[in-house]
Image (cartoon, rainbow, N blue to C red; front, top):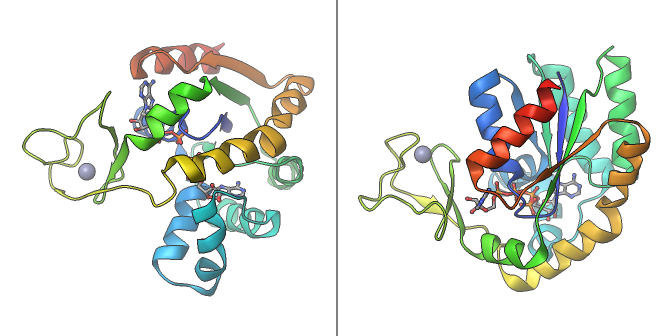
Length: 215
Ligand code: ADP
Ligand code: ADP
Ligand code: ZN
């Protein structure tokens, strides 16, 4: 089963994708994570995308489609979770074509709905474990008092993203509404769309996603 988690920055896509990976052995493909890796390892592509990402603008379709294509060609998986991809209609078309050439289907698109005020509050409070990528939140899922990640039990280092500030978030939200939200209609018309209330707590959202996937 291949699925897309669709939603604005801070909707909880990464959090839910990681839970599905753990429970269903699916593989998470996050273009945001891939681009941050390229940036951190200082590749040519990483240098090109660094500024764009810091501003909160979208990286070109060509670059992100290339990243996804490479993963689909090299990674064997019992289903993919596309997290943060596609973000434009061109990317959505490209994904459809790539899956078709592999004789794979897109089985569900889950739209995670969260209102804008909640997104801002979530984003400015986000951090992740440098060791395993577990996602934390100062308000709803704080780093344990002993400073050790509960997920991997090893790392004591937590990172905050350079683009997790109100200024960059405004641009990211604007990009979401202008470029990504048309995908809601696109997938609705393809009969693939399910909507979940992303404002509930993490477990409640997970339960709603399960219902949508197992329907
Ligand atoms: P996205 O990948 O969509 O940008 P994340 O999964 O990184 O979103 O979540 C953004 C922030 O919100 C993180 O700090 C995370 O811990 C927190 N968060 C995720 N899901 C929920 C939820 N259902 N309720 C409250 N906070 C959440
Ligand atoms: P978020 O938590 O905002 O959903 P991501 O980690 O998915 O963030 O993405 C971070 C940044 O990486 C985006 O603001 C954008 O600059 C770039 N990016 C990630 N995925 C894509 C994509 N599919 N198309 C274009 N740019 C992307
Ligand atoms: Zn960890």
